Length: 139
Ligand code: CMP
Image (cartoon, rainbow, N blue to C red; front, top):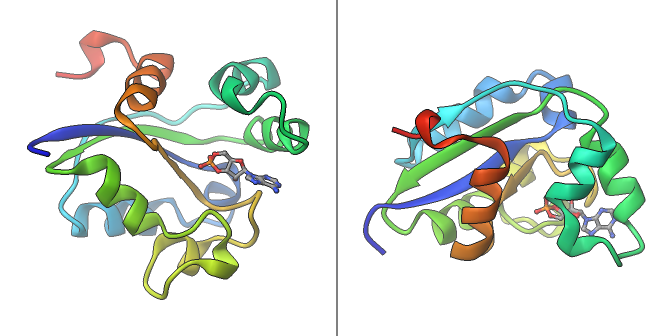
């Protein structure tokens, strides 16, 4: 799809380990334009709101605890076919199953602490972008 936007987060594990710039470099090298980015910490309640679709999962507590454990870099990315291409670049959710050369293979340590998030569809991308960015930050 032509010039599509997606949403991504560099997660607390990757920020703590000092991988943020290296991950951004991978993203730019793959042809994504960084439309907007910020560094912030979120509360557990804010993480619960972001991941509400996973509320019934057994790992919801662990996931939202982790996502509120330190600074993150939420960002909006743009390129042709951005949603699918970012997911390819990230690799499998579980880094043990991620392909060689993917961000999770290089920088993630476990299924929970997996370095990066990327939207899985257009409707979730729209929700996730709106959760972290106002319209005036997305020109
Ligand atoms: P993400 O793409 O951010 O969306 C939901 C997250 O839930 C996912 O990445 C994983 O980090 C996390 N997750 C999925 N399965 C598990 C699991 N079994 N244990 C802990 N976290 C998980």
